[in-house]
Amino acid sequence: MRPTIILLSILFVVATTACRKRTDQRAELPVLIDSVLMPPWESPEYIKAKPGNYWVYRTYKIYDNGSEEALNMYDTARVEKDTVINRRVYHKMLWPEFGGGIRTEYITDSLDYVVTNFGKIIFSASEFGKVFDKRLFISQQLAPPPYDTIADVTHQMADRDLTINVPVATFNTSSYSERYDFRPPHDNPVKSRTYYYRYAKGVGLVSYTRAFYLNADHVYEARLVQYKAK
Image 1 (cartoon, rainbow, N blue to C red):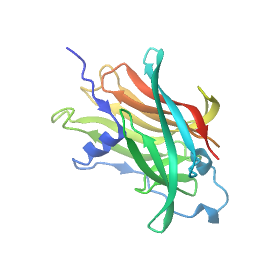
Image 2: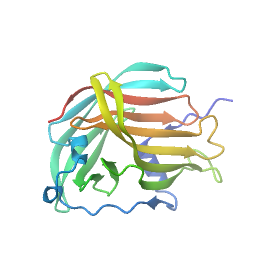
Image 3: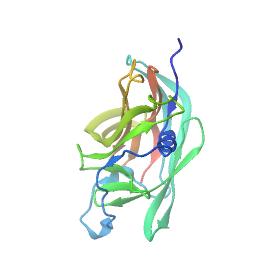
């Protein structure tokens, strides 16, 4: 029988979880405090969200056996502008979607966190080991009840001071992670997958997991090939 190949993207997770009763377990969100009033924090230096900055990525197909394939797929993320939401300045980020299209995200910094306008923590230079969010990934499109709970998803920082090589250079990074622990019968042959977003201080996002497929033997990863971060 052919394996079920279903794309799990961040937008799809948001859309499908909204259809069912939420069972989220969230860490307490940080109060939005203007960082300019406090001592300097490191987290904004890992994001480099200044208008005019950009990052060009090449996509790689990474197999579970350790082999990889460089694909002829290049995409650019950029900071379009600063904007005010609820009397607070946010940076408008434009991210390339896997398979085409652009995702817009508004981010700001508060103390040593970087958060979106919806209150989601996407980075912290200091809060390692703390779970920011824990929820169920539920989708009746992937499987009917009682197997529509596909995975438990945990959001937290990981891999502090990890050195990685990407086409443009070698960087010391810290990672924001979203780990999917699959529930039966979706845990065969892969028990879990993780989206990694690896940031380097003074540069920004240098590598990240773009997508993976349920029951497939590979993931797609974007790696930095060119950038402007001032």
